[in-house]
Image 1: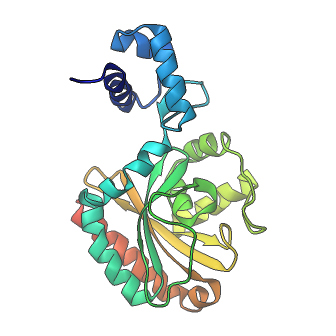
Image 2: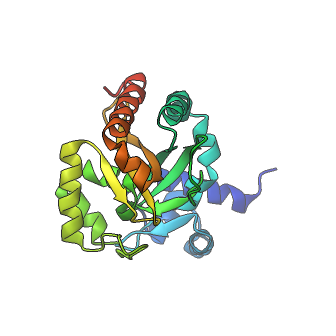
Length: 248
């Protein structure tokens, strides 16, 4: 026999997944035909645990915690299945660490991490999430947005310095994003971790929507000495993944 509270939690998740612009408690209560007090208690619990969050209008939307829980499952879906062998070849070719990530609102969530024999230690792991503004992967997503979309996101997050190299001026960051859009890849130059340099670009699927981003990360001295070749391999791999997904 189904537990009523568990069923209601799942119903809230499904309802919010179909209403990406968010809902207030009163909307959730009415649409699921449950008392507003019950809806409020469930929503508060899910909010405290990070399974849902609130946008700038105080509406409730799905939270990053759900993405973290689904990180392993994501690997078995099309993009993980398609991307993994391509990224394994890429990591072997460049002898650096390769990542696959998806976007979850104002953050990225790492889905795959593939290391080589020469990989340096990085804190990022599958399931971890990071803000869009200071990672190569996040800036790859941002660079494919319109200036209006970029401004909306960057105006609603705190641009906190992670290292002394982190860009925390919104106007400077938006200028950089235009450069990244033009050149086809984004850069993280010691903005998240000292000594590490990253190049990243996006992957699209059948509907041409941006589905994910991939990156190559390594020691700055090593990455910069071979940047042109590394970037070319990155873009070739992204195109291969997109082609297999029907995006290009």
